[in-house]
Amino acid sequence: MAGMGPAPKPADRKARRNKDTIQQTVLRWEPAEAPELPEFRIERDGQLVEFVWPERTREWWQMWIDSPQADHFGASDWQYLLDTALIHARLWNGDLSAAGELRLRVAAFGATPADRARLRMVFAEADGADQGRGRSGGPSARERFGTAKLRSLPGGKTADGG
Image (cartoon, rainbow, N blue to C red; front, side, top):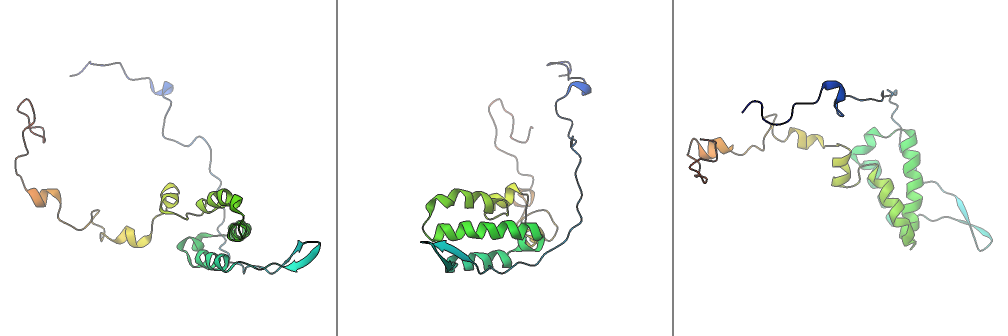
C-alpha cells in the first residue's frame, strides 16, 4: 500500500551510492616466469652450510608454478611467493610458529576454494560448464513441475502468490 513506512532519504544523504570513491591505478601487465628455488648458505653453529629445501617445499613450489593463478603472476608476485617458500620450508622443518604467516600469505594467491571465492576467482571450465545457459543443465523447476498448483499456505493462499 502506498504511503506506508518512512519516506526515502534524499539522494545526497544516502551512505551508499555504489560508486568507487577512490580512483584505481591501472598498471601495465608484465607477466614473469617463475624463478627456481635458489641455492644459498645459512649460518648454523657458526658455520656457513648449504640450505636444503625440504622435498615437500619443492613439491609446493612446483604446484604454484603449475597453478592457473601463475598465469597472472608478475615479478613482484613471484618474489613474494619465493619469500613465502622460505616460510613453507620453516614449517616443514618443524617450526610450527610459521603456520599462521604461511596461511595468510598463500590466501593472497587463492590457495583454497574460500580464498578464490573471496578474491572472485573462478575456473574457466566452471564458467562454461552450462554452455552459456546460465544453469546446471538439468531440468528447470518449470520443466519438472510445469504449472502444477503449489501447496496451500495458511489463509488459503498458495506459495506462488495465488
